[in-house]
Structures are given as structure tokens and as C-alpha cells.
Image 1 (tube, one colour):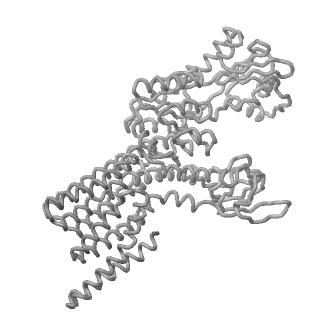
Image 2 (image 1 turned 90 degrees about the horizontal axis):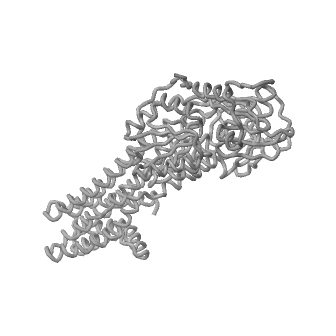
Image 3 (image 1 turned 90 degrees about the vertical axis):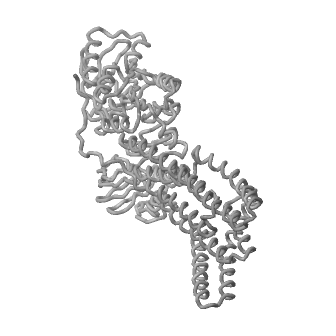
Length: 628
């Protein structure tokens, strides 16, 4: 029965109850009794029907307990009690549905923000079509005030784009040619044309909605326990009620015992908190993939960070090119042509630097070999180029002269990453690349500590000098550098073996194995990369570390809220049962208190929807790696 039908039956039942009161004061006793019986029948029918449906599924539902109590009340002639109980139960169910909708309002808001149509240019003609008919490769027009219909790259125009539906960031971003935009974003001001590369259910926005739906359906350990508990508890109450009748011979007390022992508030105590918590995260750009993950996140006592792209912005720049001899642009061209095949951010930085300098890359690398975490080895213009870190040079028996090593150490101590470039087995130069620490990193780390995280560690493949510099500036407990992806996995396993609950935060690419190994894996979403959204337990859609501290604090508050609800529900049942046995609580009043307890549990969970950590300081200047 839907909420509308429930509200209609509840309204009719309420009118009949009012009519019965009027008839009572006018002395029409028989009419009053028949009115109460009619009210009981109207309100009791859907309750009884649900009880029968549950019995067909071999389940003892709350509706079954209420049905037994109402039949018993009718049997002993307590028509006021039977009408009041059915009305209160339906009224409580109606309020419960309406209030529960609030806990799912974040998901509904997301769905409401989905675009319904798009303006595209096909064969020179501009047309408005349904969002379902947009194809990959379509040229999509988005004007000021319109929603972006697909994921894609801007090819014409510029605009200020509100991406809060994707990232949780309320400050609009300035977008221009070659920038990516995402479905669900809104163009605040400007005009852009986008080539669609993800449409329909493949867009980042559609996948966010899917993930939130799955997460809200996913049950926590506590929920699973309460579900098992309810299947035992309900039939046990029926047996206890029989014992109460055997010892007291009081049918009214027995029926009241049956009703007030209903585990309604207890059963709903955990899921309503989890759904509200996950909804809050979605509104703040944090995707938490389920109740069990929320529980585990609250227990985290050790946080491990990757450096590049996580603690730092991951948008490094070439700071210096040092060559033994020859033109630095010629060395940059060769290295860039080698790094064209690399997806590593440092390799891509070198390619971008070459493009920025107007260097044309014409040669395709041959015999390409990507050594994960170390660099690349390719053939360009019949020359063997080996580009990467010291480990790669050592692995390929390439000697680093003392002067080059001294220069590399000097750059590393200044916060740069030194990339060695060897041609035919001889190091010809070093390209220094530097990154920036995220402006919110230090504050986020302090908040994590304030929320109970005992140690914060950095695991990075970068050189130890740069890693130590970042670790010192951010006040990290431990720093381990020059690690391969498998080394990070080993460190995570060691921390777990020592009894720590470990969260690993990375950019979701090279860190995917460590993220998958940790108790909680967090990925910096960068607008929702495939690997980050699939591997991680928690995705930070706006690439902001303060979202991590929010997610951790939110998980703790959510679990606290769930415990509050559970303890309140159990305490209420015990107090009511004691009241029944001592003759202080009766059938109608017991049902009223029971329904009120259910509503209080839901309202307590709804508070989570408004949870925000204290307003963080804005406009914090970027923290550039500073040498000692």
C-alpha cells in the first residue's frame, strides 16, 4: 500500500473516530459501537492483509502482532481500543513513510538534477532531442542556465560551470576549450559546445546515482544482525504473550504486552541512520559505498596517503632541465617523444612542457617498455632512451656520474622530483619536476587527528628527499619513499597485522592495489575516473582532502546516531513492557508510545542530513614545497 492510499484510509479512520466521540456525547451508544467497529475494519484490513502476505513468506511481522491484538480487543468488546490501535498504527506508518523520504532526499535531489533533453548539432542542423537519443561524438550545445547533458570535452566557448552535483563544491569552476565537463553540471554563465564521449548510463552523474542507490540498499553489520534478531524476536514475543496470559489470565494485559513489544523502532534504528549518513555524504561530494563501509570507516585509526595527486595537487610542472651538453629543448623533445606512451602524470608533464614550448613531436617510439613505478625505455630515432628514476637506471646498468647525482640530490632537497634521461646507456640530463601541496591538506590532517586517527603515514614512489620535505611540512608520523605499488601493499598488510584499521587514500591508478588491500580504500575521484570509482570504498569527487576528514567525521557521527537509536528503541520496549506488567500502560496508550518511539528514531536520523563540520577557512594560500 502506497503513502497516498495509507493517508486516505487513515483520514477515513480519523473521521470515524471523531464521529464516535460525538455519538458518545449524544448518548447514541449503539451507533458509537458500530462506528468504532467500522473504523477498526477499515483501518485493520490493510494491516491484516500485510500480516497475511508476510506469513506467506514465512515471516512474523509487526502487522501480525497488531492484528492478533486487534482481534483480541474486538473479541473482548474493547472497540475503542481496537479502533484507536489500528488508527495509530496506520497514522504512524504514514508519518514514518513521509519522514523516511527525507533521509533519501539527497538521492531524490540528485535524480531531479538529471537533464532530460539536449541541444545537438547534426549534419549542420541544430535540434533538441531526448537525453536518451544523444550519441557519443554528438556536438552538444549548452547555453547559460542549462544543464550539461553528457560528459565531454569543450571544443568551443567558455563558461562558468556549477559542478556541485558531481563534486559537492558549491563554487563554480571556470571552463574553457579542452576542459572536461560532466553531465548534471549547470552552466551558470557562458556558452560552450561539447563533443560527447559518455552518454546515458555511462555518464559520471548516472554512475553516481547508481552508486548512491546501491550504497543505500547495502546493509551494515548492525543492520544484518538486527534483521536476524527480528526474525527470532517477533515469534518469541508471541510465546511470551501466551505465558503472560497463562500467569495473569488478563486478556487486555496480554494484548497490550503483544503490541508494545513490537520491535518497530529497533528494526528501523540502523538502516535509517545509514541511509541518512550516506545521503549527507552524497550532498558533500563523498560517495560511501554502503553501510558496512560506513561502520569500518568510523573505526579507522591509521590513515595512509599517497603523495602525488593526493597530498599534492598532482599537477606538477617542469622546473628545470639540466643537460651535460647540448640544447635542453632537443633533450626535452626526445624525452617527450618517449613519454608519449606513458600515462604517468610525470611523463605527461614532460609532454605538456614540450607542447608548451612549441616543440613538435613527430617520432613514434618503438620497442616501448613501461616499467611500472620506475619509468620507460623506448627507441626513438634509432636511439635507446631510458627515462625514469634511479632504480630504473640501476636496473638497466646505467651509471649516474657523481656530478649528476649531486645535482639530482640538490633538486630533490628543494622539493623537486628528478627524472634521469639516458640516451644509449649514458645519462644526458635531468628534468626537475615539482608539485604543490594541496592548500587544504594540513587542516584536513589536523581534523583527522582530532577525530581520533592515531597515525598518518605517507607511502610514495617519489624520492625520499621530496617525500621527507612534504612529510615534515604536513607533520606526518612516518614517510616511506621510493616504493613500488607492491611495496605499498606490503606496508598496508604490515599495519593491518599490527592490529590497525587502515584507510588508504590515493589517486586510484598506481595506488589501486594498495587501495584494494586497505580496510577502507579512498580515491581522489578527479570527476570520477573509472578505476577510482570501481576500486575504492569511498570516492572524493572534488579531489579535496577536507572531504576525507568530513567523511571520517560523518561516519563516526552516523554510527553514534545508529547506536543512539538502537539503545533508545531497546530501552523504550523494556520500559513499556514493565509498564504493562505493572498495569500502568494500556493498549491504546502503548500503541501511541510505540509509534512515537518509531518517529523519534527517524527524526534523530534525519539530523544527520544537516550534519556539517565547522566551516573551514577559505582562501588558504597554496603551500609550495619549501626547502629547509
